[in-house]
Length: 145
Length: 145
Image (cartoon, rainbow over all chains, first blue to last red; front, side, top):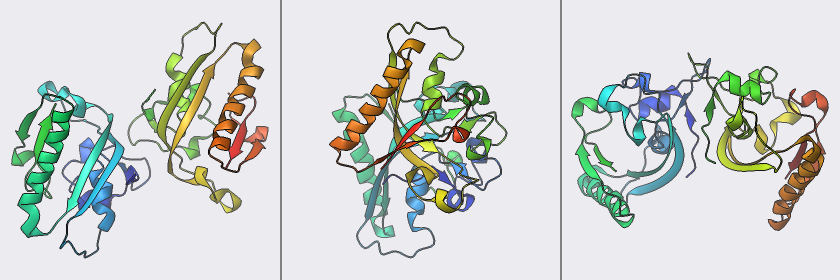
């Protein structure tokens, strides 16, 4: 999927970027429109307000530029790729039933790790503090190269 | 080159998008920052305020998303790829001396045409009316697929 990188506030709420991370977003002047910080936003909202059958997981991948205002960042937070205002990223999104949640989540982390291993990139696995998560996230693991 | 797609007003003036085409641009709220309508903007401004040696032409290519507000469009102007708010585009930029201008311009048009012919895409060649050009353009030819 090559989704749009400009989305409205309803879509930003759908994946929890709004209201909590408003200062991290670039907003377009005079419009209800924001630049996406990750392709997770338009991809996950592809089925916004629909009831869908996830007996089998629905899987998407997308490649987009991502935009971060990083207005509140400072000190130790200023280093690394995800501190850039613009970067390209491949996104993996799975829509699954609650019973498949844990196993599909673990598979996704393994998929991402195996790509880093194939590329021979050293990385560390970081479990994010729940205080740094949006309301739509139960658990977040960052693989930091 | 994979340039940034957010640029400031000085850069937009450097390639003539500002002031004439302001209503076609997306501006970021609270910042002197705009989304590029074409990679021509960041690529040409790569040498902003520099005096460079163009005895030999300097050539760049870039692939970026492009953004158009299309605020003033209507009727016949609403059709086609370049009427979309976001699309991906390959850009060819040459920095040349005045004596090479005509020949390099013609070569660039031929290069673009030959790609369309290789892809077997029918197209028409359109010479833009000077009233539709910015102050930085002497001549513009659109190849419309």
